[in-house]
Structures are given as structure tokens and as C-alpha cells.
Image (cartoon, rainbow, N blue to C red; front, side, top):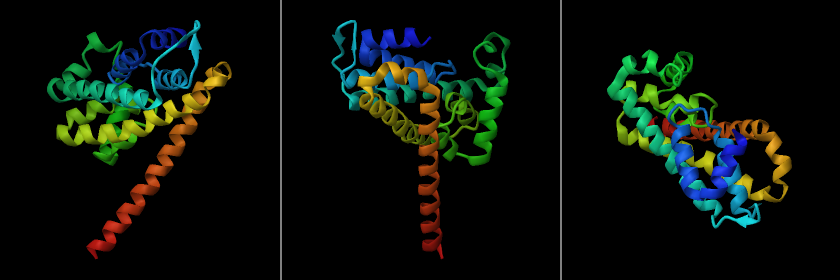
Length: 207
């Protein structure tokens, strides 16, 4: 899988990143860590077969987030207009695992619209959070905004790290999972602190 993803991104650049991130947000378990880290490494000067891709780290971050948004909107539409009947249909059971959907639904039920924002940083939940948002008929404009705000820190963090470690790519390639976990933890903690501070400020204003 990793070899296929890196080869595809190396040959097709932005287009490959966009399409793969669309698929990653449509319930297909493609690791965005590999896509975005490698895309960032290409921007940092990593050569594949003697060829240097003409991409930038900022372009990679934006294209990755755009792909996530498009894929998430498709997932949202499936949940909103297809309902549980489509999600649980046996013809898609190979793609959409019921326990994954249940996990995303529980997360959405607990945290509401903010789950769309924070859920983008969590494994499994990130891929399936669009479904419960669609099932709950969350306003599409709000869903799109929270999705984009949640995707941008993730895609840019991965692309920037890939750019920074381009010269040591072979070593980094063996540590995708640990790297993604560290990034997710840091971003989630930062978001929780930001949310608590803003919630406290709103409470003070209300009083």
C-alpha cells in the first residue's frame, strides 16, 4: 500500500494527493499520513527516480484539505439522503464497517457539530464522521466549515513535517504510525485548550 501511494503521488503530484484524500474521506482506509508526509517530502526536494516534482508544501496542504472536504461532502450526502438503509446495506458492508459507523455516531452524539472539527484528527473517526453528520442533517454550510477547519491543521502539519524531513525520508518512512499519533495528540490538546479558553471567555461575557 505504502509503495503504491508514494509512487502515485510522485508521478501525479497534486492530482494524486487530491484524489487519494477524497477517497480517504469516503470510508476507504487510505492512510492520509503516508499521502501528506510524502507530498510534503516531495515539496522539500525528495527525488524519485531522479525526478523532482514541481510542488510546494503550501500547495500540498491546501490540495489535501480540499480533497478531504470533497470526500467528506460525498460521505455527508450518503448519510443525509441514503440514511441508515444505505449505510447498513450488505452490498457496502465490505467498505463501511458497522462498528466504525457506530463509533463515529457515538462521538458525534457526544460532542455535536464540534465532533466534525475535532474528529478529523482521530483515527477511524476521521474517516467516518461525515456519515453521522449527514444522518443528523447538520446544515451543510456548517458541516463544510467545521470540516475544512479540522482538515487544514492535519494536512498542513503532515505536509510541513514531510518537507522538514525530506532528506531523511527512508528513516521516516518506517515510523508513519508513531508520527501520526504524536501529531494527532498535539493537535487535539491544542484544540481542547483553545476551546476551553474560548468557552470561558464566552461565559464571562454572558455573565
